[in-house]
Image 1 (cartoon, one colour):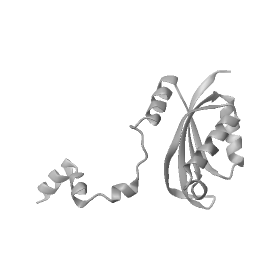
Image 2 (cartoon, helix red, strand yellow):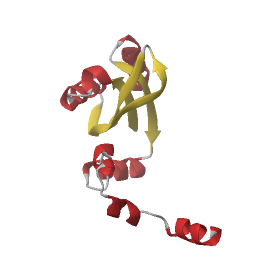
Image 3 (cartoon, one colour):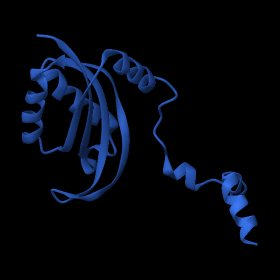
Image 4 (cartoon, one colour):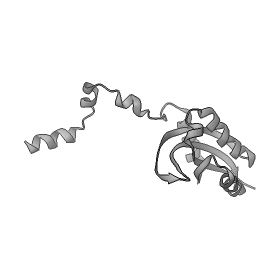
Length: 144
């Protein structure tokens, strides 16, 4: 059977994995490897409030994984995830090899990083004022 290239986004139980990204990585990679897949790159995306509660959970850890596997593996992952209480939701997309390779490279490089909202909130007022868009300044001048 042909090997395909996949991107998987898993929303994990934030209470269990928020403090331990290594445990989240182990959970996701174990699911993929159990069906014979090979993980090319993975990392946590963000830990945030969900748009709506899922099984009583209001927060979730979004975890991104790029992997290769046979096409039957996606159905097997769906079955495993349905029985796993730690995975709240998941989505698996298939990609062409060229796009897959570029995305794996980005995940491994500095261009792809998690945004830390605490760091952004700690900016000084001078730094925040320099973030103002030029169009905002023109609109403010026109209103005067």
